[in-house]
Amino acid sequence: DGSGENGWVGAAAVATHPLGGTLVRRARLGPLTEHTVFEGELFGVLLALRIAREVRMALDIVILLDNQAAITRTHTPRAKSGQLITDAILDEATRLRTRHPNAQLRLVWVPGHEDVEGNELADLHAKQA
Image (cartoon, rainbow, N blue to C red; front, side, top):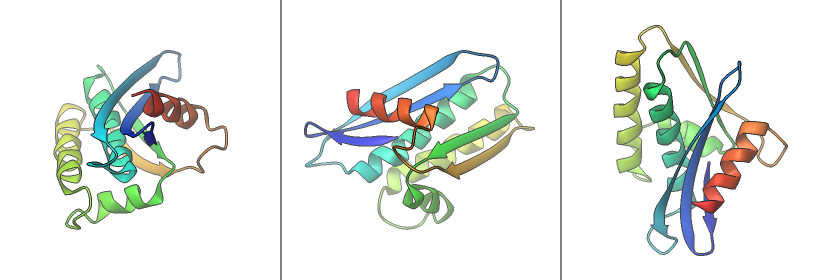
């Protein structure tokens, strides 16, 4: 998830395992005068992919996003907004497929602020980044 809070843009990703356990990654991109919340959303995808690549075994990777534009952006990588982050997402997805060749990767839209557990937790961490 991405957030603009107190003049800063933050991003976060939360990974939960079906058998228990949670991994959190978050980052502060910089001030809102230099970055957008959309960039934060894209950076959240990048963080999620990094988590997935780092785990020992990954078969079904589902990244939940509450921003439809971020999902669309990953499918049309030659637009201008967030280009550097989008390129990094594509590179990370390639590394993920190399490390976990049998893994299924899906980006799924979920409504924001509707008590979707992982999404709400990512939103909280993005605001704290």
